[in-house]
Amino acid sequence: MAHQVSLMLTDEEYAELQTEAEKSGKPVEAVVHDMLAQRLRAASEPARAMTSREFTERQYREGKVLNLPTREPLTAHEAGERERRARLLMGGTSASEMLIEDRGPR
Image (cartoon, rainbow, N blue to C red; front, side, top):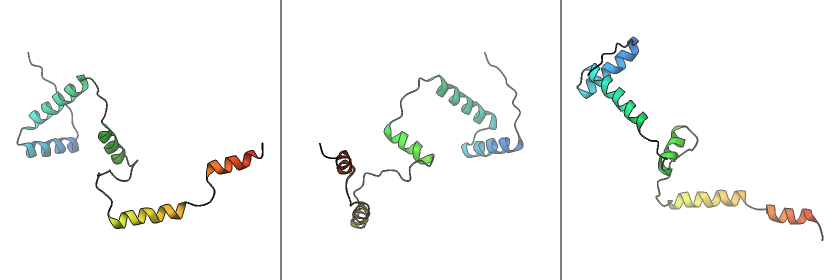
């Protein structure tokens, strides 16, 4: 059994579909059918947990992290810069030492 559905699209939406159809070499109707079928399959599949890589990539796309880890070792320049920044930020009394000092004598 087959069903026919009528769909109202704006000129911009139809132009996007037409561009996609030209890329794939299919008629617009076939592209719409494929998109709808793919969306319905995805909705019916049980949700799975994201991998840590997928989560990190999502955070990157959302602008919550500045870069993606590459697992490549740091260059000598990068390691030196990291060391310089660490030295710039360190110093003074540690938080644990301040707490001990604030407690006073026993």
